[in-house]
Length: 111
Length: 112
Image 1 (spheres, rainbow over the protein chains, first blue to last red):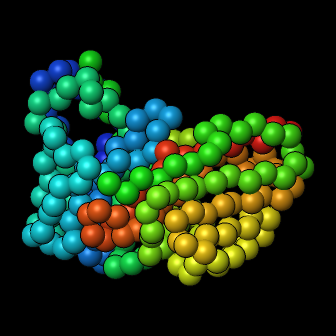
Image 2 (tube, chains in turn yellow, purple; image 1 turned 90 degrees about the horizontal axis):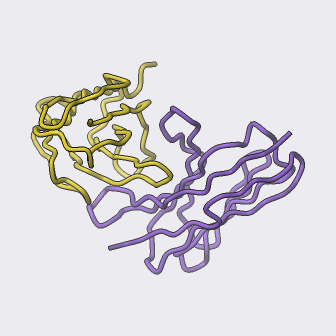
Image 3 (spheres, one colour; image 1 turned 30 degrees about the vertical axis):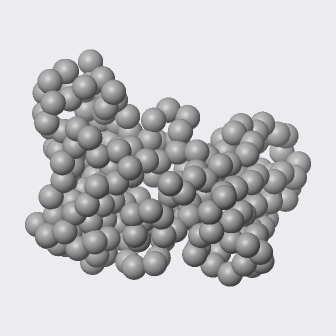
């Protein structure tokens, strides 16, 4: 079973560049999430979605955008990359009131 | 903002020792989850507790949810090197409806 798949696994961006982190899940989960994890820290919620066509801001949304055109996909867009966005990004999905299943993460460095 | 605190932040022990890590909050949670995260991987769920006072066992791991549903503990008996990792607690629902609030984690190292 694929579960939650994130691409790419690693990326280096220059300041001001843009990129999209891809996330797809094959479990037919309604809920999807994007978190960032800074070194030695826990997870902070960036954006989440409760279903196709519905997205909302989490704790740290500034500098990011998301879309949810299908149940399966939840891409995260960085428009103007900044060094403060250097982090590991995790996508997750869940059904209502159940555990979250996580992807393997995307390690992003902005230089 | 619902905050979760975890202690200790770091723990290094010898194989065979017992340990307890804690997850505390001033807020009440409808459920609390424990995840383990290994280097280069995403967190993986260990257990979910939903009832105040609930105790769940998973082999050598014992999880307890506080009576007031504000805190939880994870006890590991006879720790093994394979238990090494970052242990995260998460309470839900958080301030964002369905979503979970994560603690900063306890980084455990079990030395052979």
